[in-house]
Amino acid sequence: MVWTSAPQTNIIATFSLALSLEIVTSSFMLPAQARSHPISFDRVTQNQSTNNGSTTQQADNSQSSQTQSSQTEISQAAWDDFTPPSEGIPGRREGAGTRGRCPGGLTALIPSSTLGRTASEKPTIYYYLPASLDKVWVKFELLDEQDQPLYETSFEMKEPKSGIIGLNLSELEDAPALEADKTYHWFLTIRCEPDPFDPSGNIVVDGWINRVALNSTQLEELDQAEPLERLKFYTKEALWYESVETLVQLRLSNPEESSFEERWVELLTSVGLGDIAPKPLISSEFFTSASEEL
Image (cartoon, rainbow, N blue to C red; front, side, top):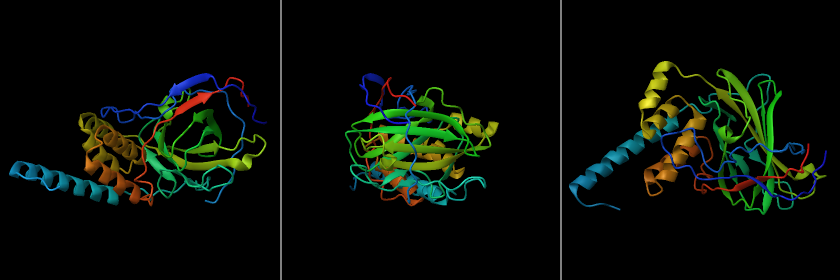
């Protein structure tokens, strides 16, 4: 099938930065109800101050101790103790540059094993877009452990800026809930070249999600915990997707708090993504065209 040009007038959703700390699984920059007419394009395999006063000093010491404790927890989390299922192949978290205006360096924020754990039915997947573009088409696919298709949706990302973007699966209408004790394979494909007949312009990243079930004691602990305690729990249990999401929300709600930035750097550095840690968190708008058909 081929791409066809069509007016891009049906606005599906506008991303917004979610500032709530109470709902950890909420996210930002996401296409609310982004159910769209599927777009036909193929994946392309790619290689991949010092403060005065005793009261202030005590508070600083407490914060420093808390930060060091968090960093230790993050560094000890077993992010890469997982491997893709035997039937599958490792994903690729970095999409190689292709040609033209398609940027190199598209990167999924996942462990180097490309498999991360979650306790959420619909987690948020974060990725880094390395360049500003006029507009691109994005395709998201979810497959089961045997790589059998479960879900697919496509949408246009208009005028995205360079930075870190979150794709919240709970905001994708009709996206299936992940079942406990099962592993899933996802693909994110970006087509930034205008030629609908040439899939070599596509950039692809993909990874694995292992959904786990929490027991009643753990659920009660989380329900009563403050965000920082939740982060401690997530890192201890090596729940990657929740750890990333919690730190994103903490950073957005407390932009002047340097300790959250330090923890963010520590988290990404622990999986070899330290170079991406300073990149900004951004929002974008997603559109779809009713004339596009599979």
